[in-house]
Image (cartoon, rainbow, N blue to C red):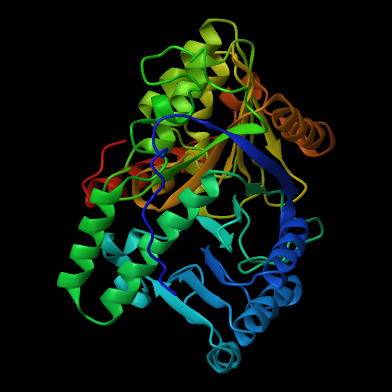
Length: 428
């Protein structure tokens, strides 16, 4: 069956109603929901992930994909070439025998990782089953209690995904089929056909994020007015907002900034690697000045040198503005979520995008933005529990008086990040 279809005509202008959303905390909840959906698949399963670790609690997902292909379902899997690399030989044999199709995005090893063009990664985590249900979030296909660099974990990784049915499932399907077509054609070295396929897809329609994030998380019509003749909304309003390296370079960052600008009383952000650019910092500072309570739940454990130390270089200006910073210490915080109140209802987002230059300037990312009080309240409850049970507040005075070495490492890491960005030709 063909994996290419015309994007729906409604794509592009507003949060759409009629969505049913289920918030999934951690890999355990996501993997069980994925297995259930894949086991019921009748025609097609598309899956993308940055990291696919063929071990422990992930094995039922790998087996479910195998079983689906064996019974005639079209199963297509894309993994990132750095996060995952080659599928293990044993599973290559299983998948080949069953008929699973898989591709590796932008593979890079050794010295090739020094090339800036190899820094562009597939970081989004998406799945769509039979065009009727989709999954989006920050959870890799990796056991909650294991880290490839740090080994076994005492507490599970803190992260979220969302299971969704409704109009945006078609948008998830469209963006995944475009990438699959590109990888398929490139593998066959037919670059002219690949370019023509991308041009045809662009002419047919755009992804959810097109038309600007101002529209992407606004429940109004294109002229700014709410339609009096529109039927009453059922279910949650939601939109898929994408970030890539061609057409949607700033969509997720702009969607965040718009939601921050609309916030009336509270902004709660949980983000693994938080190194906001100038414009995002300014949006947060403006919100703080107008009296919005801002709480950031950030990574408290050392994971990677640059992300860990560079994030602390921006703490000072935020703390001085009254922003509360909480560091999560129970395990690795991998979440990329936020809850922001607004005049027309709370806005929440769940996705794969960190608020750092590597996500916002270099990687393919996907977030779902939601305007729904119940969904936002549920996510907020999880975040507040994490803050109360496992958070450590960063005291402004203690941060200002910290030792010479931590301060030096912060600015060294920040400078290295800037040099890396300069090498890519990006501004942040």
